[in-house]
Image (spheres, helix red, strand yellow):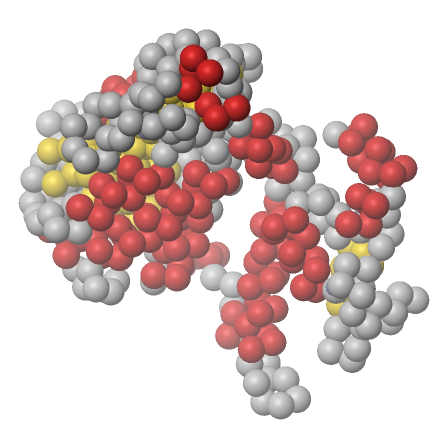
Length: 401
Ligand SMILES: [Zn+2]
Ligand SMILES: [Zn+2]
Ligand SMILES: [Zn+2]
Ligand SMILES: [Zn+2]
């Protein structure tokens, strides 16, 4: 039990809360909006500062979501029920996950009546998962969940993946009990050996076994306070996690297929795409368009996808470019009071007025930005406009990274 002693002995009620109600102050017009925005902004900045530059990240993620579908998920503390609220939030989560992690894969497992059921296989396309989740809305939740059975199922499916893949499980647990056929410590030990990271989001309370499992496998554990907080907890799993030390750095063979319209005549014959050929419903259409695998010339209608015929990962270059910013994030800007010599924002050309109490300066190009631009640069743009238009500093920032 030596491992347990190194765990931080910390509960939410011991340190946890930021005293947000003390930070809220009315502005000159008696409004609260400004200080609420301040709190959100401060939280975002804190997250930025925590992000380390040059850290190795697990970019090729394989994530299994284990969703509790037991009796306790019909509880109405989240509206309309815990289960329906989870499904709705997961839909958004899956869309966002694939947008930010285009070469990753995801699968869903639910657990009820002491059993684990696989809802969807590991796949890199959000549409299929979202469709499965929508059909789940009609299912009946009931019985007790089995944490061990679902973990075993996920482990079995993740085990066969190559060693460079980041293997993750995210458990959403509403129940306070689990009904297991064996020793769950054995399962946790196996997960640790296989390098699987297991995170838990609790909906009711903190469970000792969940916390212990997250700590031992390097995952995160949190308990949702309400639906907004729940969404935030899910969003924390969108950014790729730091790579485990045992993750191999391997080169992965990838194909960049051209759209079939642009290729030579014999390839563009009418054919059914590989990804839809297995379904015998009306969605199967003969098409001339599609992406051809550069290795085996089989046709797929969407990217990114793993070639059904030869197993090559097919991507388009913009998919890779989308995950680039995680590797070279913009450094946090210096926060200063606005009585400096800068009179307008470099980003939007707004003239700094009385209500801009803080301005933000880039450490590399020394340009000053307003709060809105600072947030936009770090959250969406992922490159500093001041550095980007100056060829010298831009080159320097590239060389450094
Ligand atoms: Zn298709
Ligand atoms: Zn192929
Ligand atoms: Zn601005
Ligand atoms: Zn800059």
